[in-house]
Amino acid sequence: MSDKILITGSRGQLGTELSKLLPDAVLTDVAELDITDLNAVQKFVKENGIGTIINCAAYTAVDKAEDDAALAEKINVLGPENLAKTGCKIIHISTDYVFDGKGYKPYAPEDETKPISVYGKTKRAGELAVLQNAKEAVIIRTAWLYSPYGNNFVKTMRRLGAERESLNVVADQVGTPTYAGDLAKAIVQILPQISEKTRGIYHFTNEGVCSWYDFATEIMDESGLKCQVNPIPTSAYPTRAERPAYSVLDKTKTKNTFGIQIAHWKRALQKCIRQM
Image (cartoon, rainbow, N blue to C red; front, side, top):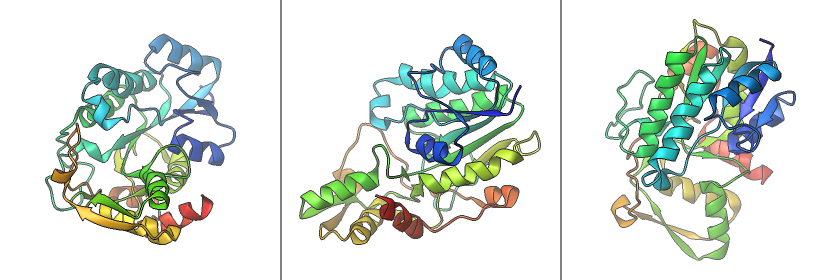
């Protein structure tokens, strides 16, 4: 094994941010490497002298996954399992959707998982597959990811806010937005600390708590948009997959284990919008 780092899903939001911080990393997306093919994965790792894998590849279309469970499972469970079987150190990205959201205090990594959607169930199974197959594995659950890249809530709100006079946004789902640039920095800090001792599940989002409505309002304010944001209940905006109503993640273990400082979500949002 060499010390080369492989970033899978490198064209997504997090992969893009990581590739800026790790210019020597080997970057793959689905076109370059099919992580659901074990032989292809093992061959690629060997030929490229990979020692560490950061897995940002995932099936993330939450509503579509309800009707496309087989593909979601292939990418979210079999893919991470194959990567974990290479013997490399691995950082695997997971989600707040592994919880049912019926709690009222921040979820710690060891709290019971009860996913309520196909997406959540496949992501939880992927976590277990990584832990079963990799000796040195760090799983990072995150939530509400956004950046200047790809499709995300911030970009959608800015686009709609410029086009419309008012918007309705769900106000009874509570969590914490995460700027992909901040998550990428945390991952770079964690990389040299991966060992059998730090093996396990960790949480990373920005600090603070808000609803999607609060988040949307702040996006309009920071972007200087005059669009009026109206709060609505989840029941007024039915979706194919059920979402956790409360999915705030407790980050104490991450901060204590890796010595990471985390910015408040409002400050992180300001930083991201300045880059847009």
